[in-house]
Length: 153
Length: 121
Image 1 (cartoon, chains in turn blue, brown):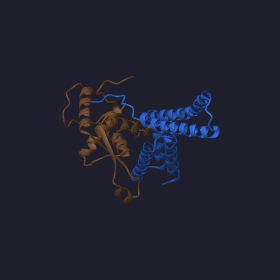
Image 2 (cartoon, each protein chain N blue to C red):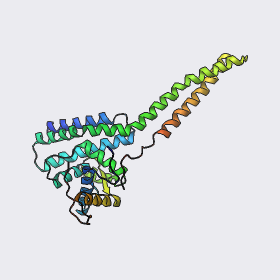
Image 3 (tube, rainbow over the protein chains, first blue to last red):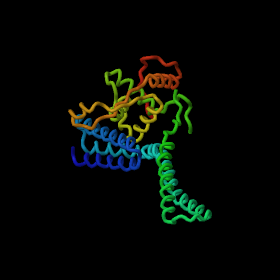
Image 4 (cartoon, rainbow over the protein chains, first blue to last red):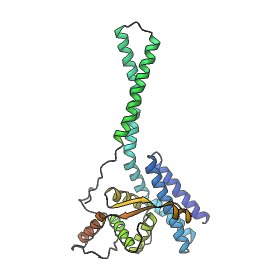
C-alpha cells in the first residue's frame, strides 16, 4: 500500500469514526468494521487490477464524498432514539433536586422534631434512588427502534 | 416524499439483483465492497457506489426483511489477514420484491430467470 492509499484509507476511517461517535456500541462498531472491510477489499481489488495508487485513492475519496450526506442522514436516523433516551435520562437527573426540595418543604410544614441532618440525608438518598430508577428505566423504554418509514411487501 | 408500498429505489433494486446474481454464481453471501463492485460491473459504471449510499440502503433493506446479514466466521479473515466481513443474503421476500419491481418498471409481468442488470440513476 502506498502512502497515498494509506492516507485515503485513514481519512475514510476517521470520517467513519466521526459520524458514528456517540452511537450505541453495537451499531457504531458494526458500521466501522463494515467500512474497514470495504476499504480493505477495495485496496485488494485495486492491487489485483494493478490500478494506479492515485486512482485508487481518488476513488476512495470520491466514495466518501458522494456518500457523506447519506452517512449523516443514517446517523440522524439511528442516533435519534439514543439521544432521546439520553435527554430523558438527563431530565430525570434534573428532577432529583426537585424531589429533595419538595420533601424538605413538606418536612418543614409538618414541623416534626427530628434531627435535621439525618432527615435530609435520608430524603436525599430516597430522591437519589428514585432518580436512578427513572434514569435506568427511561432509556430502556425509549430506545426501541423506530418503525420503518418505507413499506415493503 | 414517501414511496408507494413495494416500490424499490434503483439502488435497492440493484443490490437485490446483484445479490441474486452473486448467489447464482456460487457466492452464498456478499459484503459491501463485493456489492459495490457487482453494481459497477453490471451497469458498466465508472465509479463504485458511495459508502454512505450503499450501507444506508443495505440497512434499509435488512430492516425491511429483504436481506439478512451475519458476520463471517473469523477463520477465513484470520487466514487471509483481513478484517472480517458482514455477509448479506437476499431473502425469499427480497427475491419476490425485485422480480415484482423489475416487472413494474418494464411494464410487463416478471419472469423468473429474467436478466436483472439494472441501470442506476
